[in-house]
Length: 170
Picture 1 (cartoon, rainbow, N blue to C red):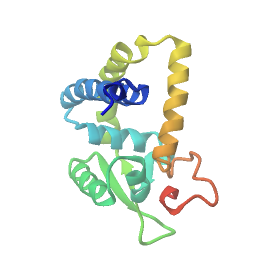
Picture 2: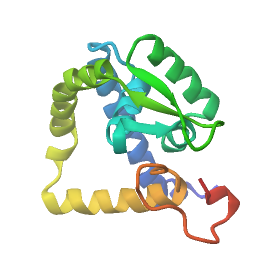
Picture 3: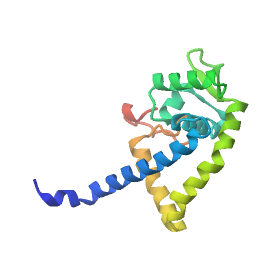
Picture 4: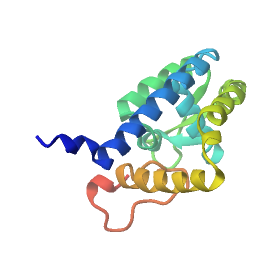
């Protein structure tokens, strides 16, 4: 094996991405725990709160997260028991239902956001000047759209192009 292969900038790029993700995730998890939320619950509340009507179809919520449809069902079940989310039947499709953030869920999100935003500022955005942050966001969106084309499913974001392969359809 060529020892220089480990100096490949592709390995460096992915390695740095993993290191940054792990470091930020650990800080976020600790802060969210203080508000009785897991990182997944925070992600679900955030995704719902950023969506029209504070709701998403369960299948769209699964597409937007790293969870399977059964994983989303389990998380939503738990969050529904805690009063953070409610389910609502889809009026146009009896097979579908919506996850809707409740007033209690919005309050919990509002309580956790100031500390979360401060962590983002301290450990992420303040490390970059505005031009570097803009370039990073652009690059991350392009990579996200390539590897996770359904990341904005149901939120009014762009859908996969007509004729996209079955694996790229939401």
